[in-house]
Length: 105
Image 1 (cartoon, rainbow, N blue to C red):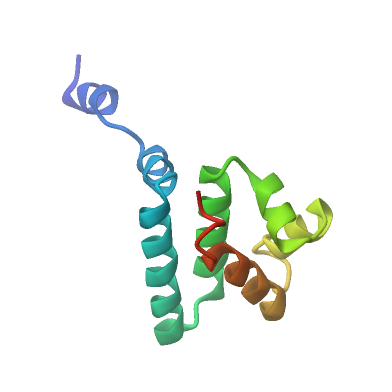
Image 2: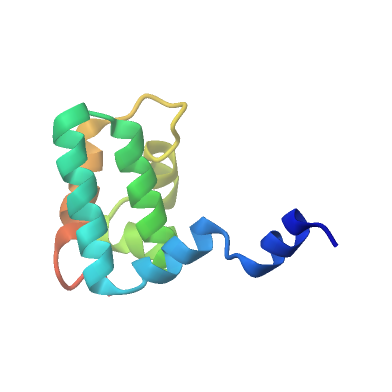
């Protein structure tokens, strides 16, 4: 067995590790706050969308996100597609809902 094969068997994919950590409210809050601080520096909206997707996935998918933001599943899916033009006001609404302490559980 090669070393690469052994390493693959012994490691957890980063995304799985991240989602496990994002299930913890304090970690998710810090993750979101850090992403917002970085956004203020570089203005990278695609990273903010990725952060929202990761938090939503860790919380069980976009179903909770649609409840919190009162957006339809179709509208939310459209907003989170990187190839579509992003609507910053809607992304801010999503971030506002996520940042409330009782939302990230």
